[in-house]
Amino acid sequence: PVARFNISLSRDTRDDIFNATRGTFLSNSFDFAPPGIGSSVKYIRNYTQYLKFREVKPNVVWASAYRFGLARGLGGSGVDPGDQFFAGGATSLRAFSQDNSSLRSGNALFITNQELRFPLAWRFSGVGFFDIGNVYGRVGTANLFRQRYSPGVGVRVDTGFILLRLDMGHNLWPRTGEDRRRISFGIGHAF
Image 1 (cartoon, rainbow, N blue to C red):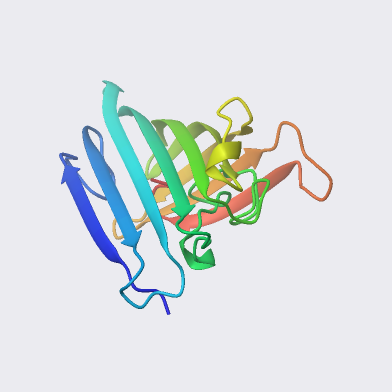
Image 2 (image 1 turned 135 degrees about the vertical axis):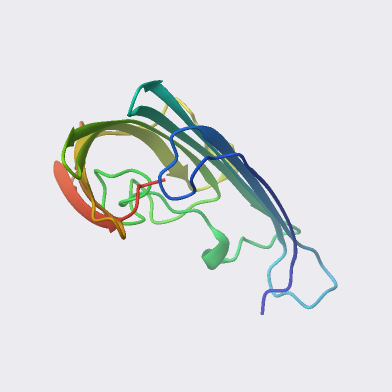
């Protein structure tokens, strides 16, 4: 069993939560599983994300996302595997398979996503993106100079009801067993 305390804070100034053109979103979640409250694992964990949207020209939006997480076991205990961090997939590092950029999971995470969103024709729009990040096994092994890179392009279709997303990410330096390109489909923007 995992028993923990959680404090979450958020601030949202986006003009539209589904298709923002300006504003920011900031959230922070802090978990504490201390000894003495019935938890089989004891740890602290913090996850912060910051999203920023700004219109650089009419109908052209620069969207940025920054995500940072740290977790550490207490008193010789590890972090619950379900509370470790993952990277890779359609909403983080798009050139990599879901939750697998270089490690399966880890206790430290850094991801930044940059997107330029622009209209194409009718209900179609395009996106150029560059994702950078990694997940690290332990907090002490986190190295912001050791990142995975995922540039790519995408198409969005606004059906009037939902936004459909198709992205193709390119793995600049694939490792053994990794694909050079990955196509992902989703509903709504990646962030």
